[in-house]
Image (tube, rainbow, N blue to C red; front, side, top):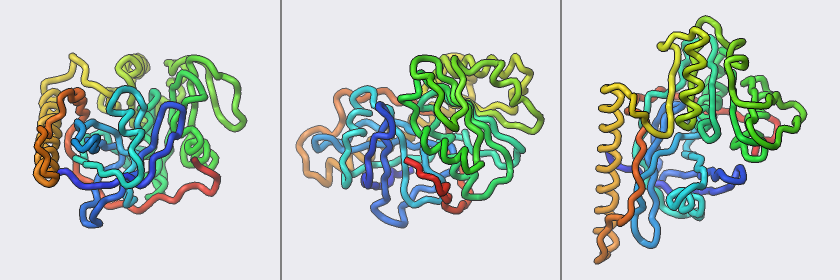
Length: 306
């Protein structure tokens, strides 16, 4: 798997701590093909040298030509990503992951913690693009309403009838927002119980603690494991041998891609400095490769979406 060349076409802050990067392929024939819910490994060039590759969920619908990722600005790499100006080169490796949209279910219940909402944005846009007839429910946990990535877009999709959203606010900023269903506190069994139905598939994505709590609540409510899909920002120590093998293979592919890009950049630039970063951040692969069905670009709701 060789990295694809992209350039940054737009970089905007969509919340106080989250940047949305829109990338376009350098060559139309090199456009990434993926399934809604998958992720990529992404790298840039900083001070004339390639950065480490890091994993980010894809935000956009598979039918779109551009590629979007959302980055929570936390640490050196994410700060660098958030500062990439339009025209900056980017390297994309992937797609990875089996945490993908399931159109055979009657209902999807998406359970997101903070920036874990990103793969769900792709799924919601994709469902709208293919006019999927099922119901989508998003339970979206955040610390406060001032820093909820994609809240305006989700509100617009909700008004358009594409998704039913419930925001669970555990910290400050709990004041009611007109037209927005909001509950105080964390996502709980009480909030999940009405969504436990036959022929429903549950997706859980977020930080490790959030994931553990949500998975326990679903088990307590009698939801079978085979109807629950999960993806976290780091693999837990309790993962199965198969999961460990999949994540390990993904890591090897990402590191191989990073090495390929670094060597290529080194040769093309004529640099006399070692292309290997001296302080690479750890990789956190989250899945395996998956085939991608053909899709149609999504149509956004008529209401304003930021």
